[in-house]
Length: 214
Ligand SMILES: [Zn+2]
Image 1: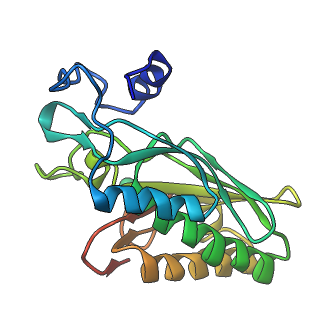
Image 2: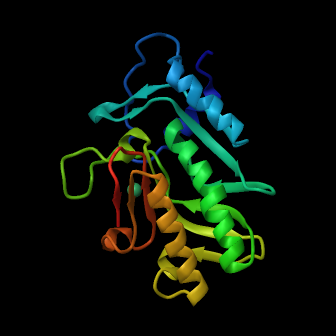
């Protein structure tokens, strides 16, 4: 596929690392052509998520977008799940996120809150930045983490991490803890309000080989 201008604005909107991406090594963008990557995209297709594969990109400071997708929507048992504010997401992370959204979040919303999930609100995924207070690149710098901030239900309720974790109704607090626990079973690293004040308003969900759940 050729680089298209249709893809350019999405890249330009991707958070802090918008300055001067390196010139691609060839005149053509580098789409995933590795077997594992193709397999990952095929698997994401079977979840019936709506997504667009994005070309591989290399940025300054070592930030990368490799085998990423622009995720437009996911599927629940009965319908489509919207996702807000997500641009570039690594394919393995997108697969884990799709499964968590359907089997972890939507089903918990039905059981605990009595209404199905229609949208997951996020604070984004890719961002070229270091882990706060360190000189180590964040998983966000390679599109391997999503910050989830809230959930919209079919009955119109909106439950946010910031508003619901300690101040929500008993059911909302239970819902947020249940989906936090289910995230810990699926993602390598999960950081929420119990971790530190930086995470008071979101759950950091990261593809990693570790098992860190706070
Ligand atoms: Zn994060």
